[in-house]
Amino acid sequence: MHECDILPLEGREQMNTLDENKDLLTALEVCVLVHCSYNALNYWYRWKGLNPDNEYAKLLPDFIQTANRQTRYWKREDVAKIIQFRTSVPQGRNGVMGDITQKYRREQRKREQNGKQTKSRRGNGKTKQ
Image (cartoon, rainbow, N blue to C red; front, side, top):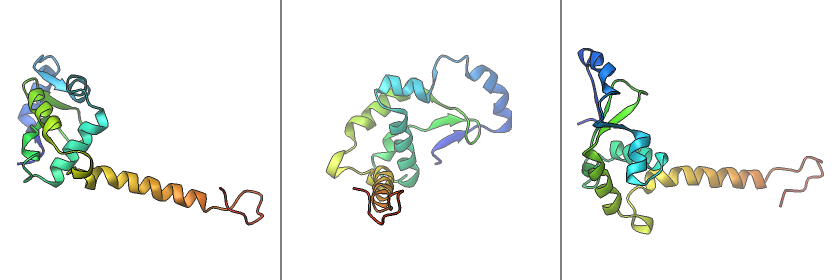
């Protein structure tokens, strides 16, 4: 199963009523209810896409999306499943999402190290400290 349910062309007419449906929540509304950041929610679903067979990934419910790069919607009852995922997934040293979250931290460290090794603007050959 894919990480999201993309509605067929016939379902796009229903999108006019999708925003009016009070049982559907946007990503920001889900984040407020789950007490997580928008980036954390994105990391979780990116990780789910890379590891669909993982037992923790199966806890995350699929979201509804009409097309790529469009607003994602979750059913109100899916919030409890997302909270269950948040509380049960191992974090820290024993975490399972290091391949997603640490990728960006490694890139940031590399940029910081390259910045320290650049020469100063005066051109005297000294490196920045």
